[in-house]
Length: 288
Image (cartoon, rainbow, N blue to C red; front, side, top):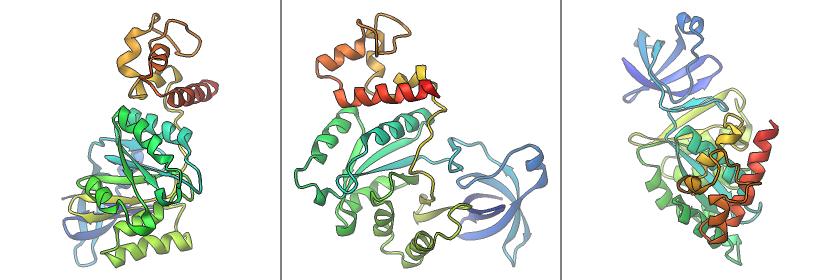
């Protein structure tokens, strides 16, 4: 029997099989093989007690994606939440996250939240920059529920996780999405308020058929040190088609003169702010 791990508290897993939830531990041999099940895993289970919904995990099916911190697998979409005001937009973090999702092969969606607070409408400039690169950008006012229906539509058919700095409105967005399901909204908001199991608990909630949202701490900061600094340019989407215009194969795009990326900036094809942040991320990875 196959199911999906929807929650993990310490070594106890909740597994969804159709409309039923089983509680299970992992078979001992998985530990010997040093394979630990994580939320998002598709697994094969053996039923131990049908009446008590008890089972054991026999096998972990192949993963499409895997994130080390927080440990999750098979996420297909990462919602990168940026606040237009209070706090101000952290575009360096956003570009780190975008590079990381490109590295992992996960689809990103950028959400510009709190747009009602940005009286100068500076968020429109951010939207233009990232849409030109080819990213989907959604404007939201979580408390006013603006943009929520568009966001819900974008989540369909995916296992979604939300990421962003503290205070950008991730919890408010999630609660707005769950407005028609008080029980699940309550579970998420209660966990956020009380901090219950925040260090050991990770969960995903079904909001529609085959559509899930991860409720997990730990996505606010990204350790992207898995990316080799020499490879960073491959994960800046707008850089990739221009790399062949560089004179040197191992061009860093920082010190070299005859560089396709620098030429593109001069010609207005690449946003200079994105390039400056690329340089900062590159140096940070190189130091590590």
